[in-house]
Length: 187
Image 1 (cartoon, rainbow, N blue to C red):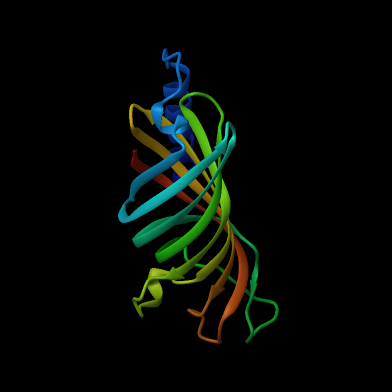
Image 2: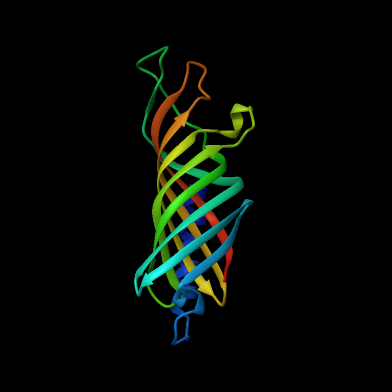
């Protein structure tokens, strides 16, 4: 329940920042043909490059390295191989070590934009199963508010998880993750 409060407060902050904007022209970052940005997420850093082909046609690539912290919001049931009537739960937290993504950038307003697209991630190299180390393939949606050259936002992931941390072998399941705070600089 605590994560829902954090999520709600983050969304309220994003909306208030966007609505309180008195800026009449769009940020220079979203108007550029070549858009570069670096972001920090707890213990991870990412670099993104987007190319603006036309007004609302912006495609890009992103790479993240480090320990990107994510919170599991929901997952499909994971059937236990030793007892078919029992279901296991994945770990509530997940750290990914390396992520690659292609994305489409859509500006909602002159200060609010969305990046969404397919990604693939490699888990952290720690052997400790308590780190929650599934490999992920899926779609990520990131919501950002621009404040000068800074962007502040959050990311959601819907992913197929390939988790080998179960004692009876690898399991595949669908999961919804959130990264509650992403701060970056666009240039």
